[in-house]
Image 1 (cartoon, rainbow, N blue to C red):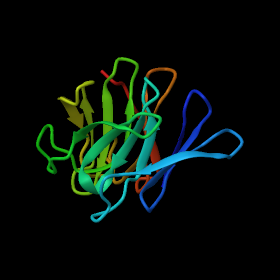
Image 2 (tube, rainbow, N blue to C red):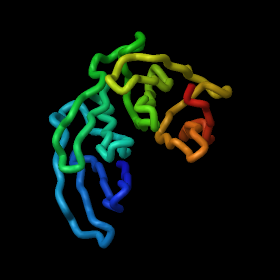
Image 3 (cartoon, one colour):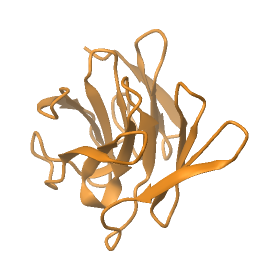
Length: 166
């Protein structure tokens, strides 16, 4: 469902089972683990944070799980489903910037990006359902560019939108 490469060129993948698997640059399996529960659905996003930890967007559990590179669960952000500030919807992807802020993409009924501080506390959110600039129809992936901008891939609107992170 998603893949990410860390600074040591290890490839992390998350699949539909919901396994996270780690491979070296030659494709040799190193280790793996699963998310705590998959009865309601499986993770859909994966990235590496500024400290080399693995960010797993656990879609159907409305949370972002942060794992060490060895698979130890370090923290869970969110988990309270809803659209109020601090609650999360269907989490599809997440990234962390150099200052420690998390950007969490949500789709389904909500269609927004939520910014959280390093401790997971709500900072702000933006976006709404629709096809205009600043609106989303299904965020599938995000990336922070070397320019410090947040690039957001909106699958159903067939476009990339670019935002400042301030």
